[in-house]
Length: 115
Image (tube, rainbow, N blue to C red; front, side, top):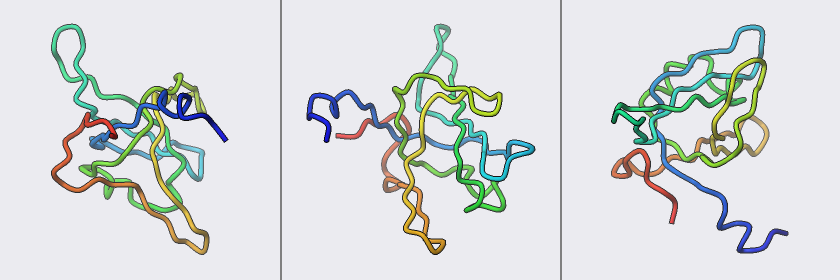
């Protein structure tokens, strides 16, 4: 169990997947570029790179492009197979191939925080 105070520290945001590609020499890993409506100091779009172990569920990574999903966005960066990951994709699996991304409805724009 964690306290409510600890849970409040978790930042959950909607992000739109801009690109998805398989990480070579791995079975499960995709490298995603995700828009969270963040800007750099010059006001340019600043997508994040997120490494996710969902490749077994998506033989063609292109089907992910354009999807808006929910992510944890305040994890410390982590290097996974030589690629920096700056967040974590929310998904659920029930075994026997049952798998789902957590996707908000279409009216939720990138960068929206969970309430």
